[in-house]
Image (cartoon, rainbow, N blue to C red; front, side, top):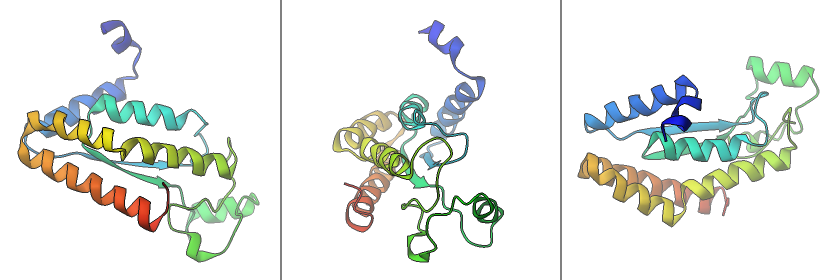
Length: 161
């Protein structure tokens, strides 16, 4: 409704308009979402799923913030004693390797897994496929291919579901 639209931050309305304009030119839109920033609270996961649906992106990447060694983020989190492992094999954007500010590491992992399950569920993939047909077959097929590839990666490689 118009009343709901007035309550949205202007940036969200701008994203929706930008995605529409990109679609109008026959280009699929992939959103990339990173969870675990210091201002992320537990509601970020549900809000992100709602945002993805609202702005009409075609598919998404779901990642956990990873403070790679040698970066200012790693240095800061190490000084704050928030690094929980230096097992570099876990620095892969899917494992939680630090203590988030407003949730537990387990809550961050569970929240990101929830988003991935929502984005890459069969229902969601089929719904986006059908909706994207209005922008052309290329967008529909390319975004569906990306979603299926991501679903396979999350399931087989990351064992998220």
